[in-house]
Length: 81
Image (tube, rainbow, N blue to C red):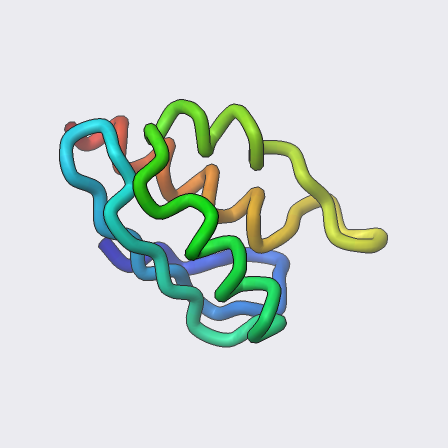
């Protein structure tokens, strides 16, 4: 799934889920090292655990962040299953 981000530097997040597990994540744009790190950390984690850890994370004065947008993408995927 490709999730179009809102309110952050990255433009989109490509997310692949296998059942209830995050298989892979790739951010398009954003802070390169940080988004690569997030992608590596969440690979293999349960979707619900990623949502619980990342949802609500902010970036500076923004009400959202790339990790928060990933949580929103995963919630959207769950809703479609």
